[in-house]
View 1 (cartoon, helix red, strand yellow):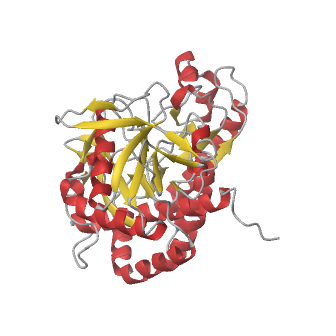
View 2 (spheres, rainbow, N blue to C red):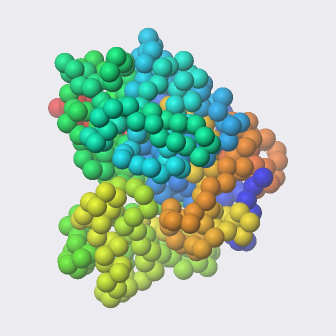
Length: 431
C-alpha cells in the first residue's frame, strides 16, 4: 500500500523512482564499493520527506528508539543484519550489554528496548540491560503493556571493563544518545566494543556536520545517476552563537534564512513549482522534536513571541540551545487516512531492515511531525523493500517506492559514516 500523494507535483519523484529502478545494479554496486571504504554506523533511522518534487532526509538518528514500530514480518531481516553486524565486530561474541535511556517509564520506549533484546537474542547473544541511573542499585523489573517484563541492572566497572554482576560482555550497545553528556563509566573501556562510539553522541555530534557529509554523498550519487543533487539534498546553513531567550545572534539566523529562501525560490522557478518556500530552524544538537520552528519569511524572526523564544531556548535534557541549523523545508505530501505522514527508514549495519510512517493528524505539510500526538503506521513497509518490481508504473508499486526510500536512507547512513570518520578522536591523521 503506497500512501497517496496529495499533489499533482509528483512528476519529478516518479521520474526519480524510474531512474533509481533502472539503475539498480549500478546503485547496489556503488554502495558495495562505498562500504568497502567506510564502516556503516551500527544502526540508525532516517526521517524522510516526500514533496512529490523532492525527496530528502531531514534527520538521521544514530540511537534509534522505535524498533517496536517495525512489523513482525521485518524481524527476520533485522536478525540477519544483527548477525552480520556482530560477526564483523566481535565474531566470538557471546554476551551483549544493552544500555538504554534512563531513567524512563515510557512504555513505548521500553517496547523498543524489548524489541532490541529480541533481535539480538535471536542473533545468538545473551542480552542483559544495564542502566546509567545511579538510583538503581539492584536488579529492577519494569512491567510492559503486553504483560512481560524487562530487568534493569546496575553497571559494574572492573579494571577498565564494564559489565554487570557475573556478566562480562564483549560488546556494549548504547541506545542512549548521550544528550546529557558522557558518563565517566563509559570512558576508557579496555578491549570492549562500544557501539555506537562515544563521538556519535550529542556531546560531539552536530546536525550541520552530518548534512555537510550528506551533501558530499548526494553529489556523488547524483553524478552516478546523471541528475540534479538538489532533488535529494536539503540546502542548509548553520549559526553557532545564538540565544533565543536573550534575542542575541538572531541576525545570523535571519541572514541565512533570507539567503536560503532566495536559493529555494530559484530552484522552484527552475522546476516550475508553485509552492511557497520555507526553512526549518532547529537545534544543531539533540533529538526528540524539541527546539524546532518553521519560518516562511526572514522578517518573522524580528518579532518572535515569548513562547517561541522559550521553545527555541531548550533542547532535550534541559540543554541550552546556542547552535542552530537552518534547513530547507521539504513539505510532505504523503497522507495516511487524510493525516500528514512521513516515512522513517530503519537500518542495521548496511541493511535496510524496515520502516514505518510517522503520522500526525493535527500538523501541516510544512511542520515537524515528531511531536506529541503522532502515531506510527508500519503497514506501508510490510512488503520487502529489497525486491522492487521493474516495469511497474512509478508511484503505483509499494516495493518500488520503498526501495527508493531505502536508497535515500542508505545515502544518509553513508553520510553518517563519513561524519563519524571525520569526528573520530582516535583516527590517524596524515599530514
